[in-house]
Amino acid sequence: MNESVGEKVAEVLSQQVISNISEAGAGVRPALSWDDPYQINADLHCHSTVSDGTLSPEELAARAAAAGVQVWSLTDHDEVGGLARAKAAAHAHGILFIPGVEISVTWAGKTLHIVGLNVKYENSVLEKSLEQVRSGRLERAKEMSRQLEKVGIDGVYEGALKYVGNPNLISRTHFARCLVERKICSDIRDVFARYLTPGKPGYVPHDWASLRESVEWILASDGIPVIAHPGRYDINELQMDELITQFKNLGGIGIEVVTGSHTIDQYTRYARRALVAGLKASRGSDFHGPEESRVNLGELPRLPDGCVPIWDNWAQLQPN
Image 1 (cartoon, one colour):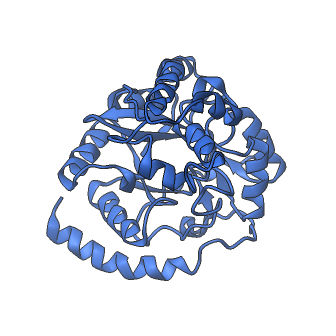
Image 2 (image 1 turned 135 degrees about the vertical axis):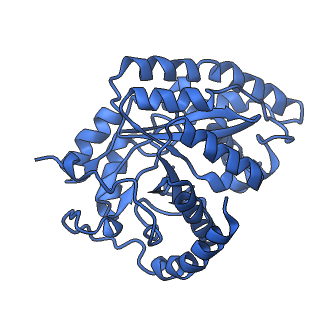
């Protein structure tokens, strides 16, 4: 990254981001206008019971509408099975729906996520590819349970099944809910501070899709590849530079700048990275449920000025 350019961009963005915080979560959904894309309340990252969320696609659509969301995407982990339901529910609420998915990726030995937006989810290549990614989750879950048994916590696999809407997508989040219910941990964050993460009891590594595969699958379905919540990854600045370079060279288009897991400083940092790398900026709450998420659907600050919104040319997608 050119440091002089980056520093100048950061200086301009820092004040813009702070001023935008007060504009978050309007709650009332005005008519969708494309005259100023920055004013559009877009939430392009959330999860339903089809993966590891706690609300159904229909409940999410209703919640998005109540929060004033105008453009909405459901991005379940490695699964497109809820998109048809979400689309119908969004249409009933007058929301522009963007079909999405969040693909699990292994890169440099770390687990990352790549979101695909506006995917053609009936695409056989995408569906078959996601089925490959999902394979192995069940055995991994059983091994996680065996690892927890070694530290005196029994029956977590069976307990986690209570929270699983899709058996093919049992995940660490379902395990975490079981540990909270059993009062072993106080909340989801406490779980991941003590268990199920690298170096902690119950963590079982897994090889997901490659970065190349995830981007190619999304592009093959006419979708838009986006790096999800980059601030969450345990990689250094040089690795982030390399990730973004590889991603863009493969055909990647966007990066999440404003997301539920980012701090205010990270809004500025990843806005700067988007500008310098020539990537479009996305916005998404990563909402999983009312009791677990840091922010509600649609209740995020708008993108910093200067970023190019990932939705800037979606006006033609509006239903008649």
